[in-house]
Length: 67
Image (cartoon, rainbow, N blue to C red; front, side):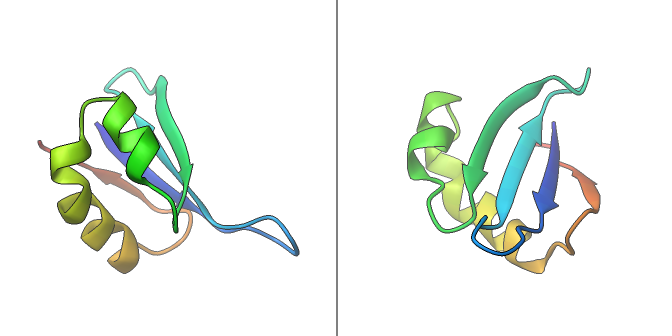
Protein backbone atom coordinates (compact mmCIF):
# COMPACT_ATOMS: atom_id res chain seq x y z
CA UNK A 1 0.00 0.00 0.00
CA UNK A 2 1.19 3.51 -0.77
CA UNK A 3 0.33 6.88 0.74
CA UNK A 4 0.58 10.27 -0.99
CA UNK A 5 -0.11 13.69 0.56
CA UNK A 6 -1.46 16.23 -1.95
CA UNK A 7 -1.16 19.98 -1.30
CA UNK A 8 -4.37 21.91 -1.73
CA UNK A 9 -4.53 25.37 -3.31
CA UNK A 10 -6.70 28.37 -2.43
CA UNK A 11 -9.97 26.96 -1.03
CA UNK A 12 -9.13 23.33 -1.83
CA UNK A 13 -7.81 21.56 1.30
CA UNK A 14 -4.87 19.17 1.57
CA UNK A 15 -5.73 15.55 0.76
CA UNK A 16 -4.27 12.08 1.28
CA UNK A 17 -4.43 9.23 -1.22
CA UNK A 18 -4.11 5.57 -0.24
CA UNK A 19 -3.24 3.29 -3.15
CA UNK A 20 -2.70 -0.47 -3.40
CA UNK A 21 0.35 -2.22 -4.87
CA UNK A 22 -1.07 -1.84 -8.40
CA UNK A 23 -1.52 1.88 -7.62
CA UNK A 24 -5.32 1.68 -7.67
CA UNK A 25 -6.93 4.36 -5.53
CA UNK A 26 -8.33 2.86 -2.30
CA UNK A 27 -9.14 6.01 -0.34
CA UNK A 28 -9.00 9.76 -0.86
CA UNK A 29 -9.63 11.95 2.17
CA UNK A 30 -8.94 15.33 3.69
CA UNK A 31 -5.99 15.49 6.07
CA UNK A 32 -8.25 16.86 8.81
CA UNK A 33 -11.04 14.24 8.32
CA UNK A 34 -9.63 10.73 7.82
CA UNK A 35 -12.03 8.70 9.98
CA UNK A 36 -14.80 7.65 7.56
CA UNK A 37 -12.49 6.84 4.65
CA UNK A 38 -10.11 4.78 6.74
CA UNK A 39 -13.03 2.88 8.27
CA UNK A 40 -14.42 2.12 4.79
CA UNK A 41 -11.17 0.46 3.67
CA UNK A 42 -10.78 -1.42 6.96
CA UNK A 43 -7.95 0.68 8.40
CA UNK A 44 -9.89 2.46 11.15
CA UNK A 45 -7.86 0.78 13.90
CA UNK A 46 -4.62 2.00 12.30
CA UNK A 47 -5.80 5.59 11.78
CA UNK A 48 -3.48 7.06 14.43
CA UNK A 49 -0.43 5.34 12.96
CA UNK A 50 -1.31 6.41 9.40
CA UNK A 51 -2.05 10.01 10.38
CA UNK A 52 1.27 10.29 12.25
CA UNK A 53 3.00 9.28 9.02
CA UNK A 54 0.91 11.77 7.05
CA UNK A 55 1.89 14.65 9.33
CA UNK A 56 5.60 13.95 8.72
CA UNK A 57 5.28 13.18 5.00
CA UNK A 58 6.22 16.02 2.63
CA UNK A 59 3.66 16.99 -0.01
CA UNK A 60 3.93 15.04 -3.27
CA UNK A 61 6.16 12.30 -1.90
CA UNK A 62 5.07 8.65 -2.12
CA UNK A 63 5.57 6.45 0.94
CA UNK A 64 5.20 2.65 0.91
CA UNK A 65 3.23 1.37 3.90
CA UNK A 66 3.76 -2.12 5.26
CA UNK A 67 0.67 -2.79 7.37
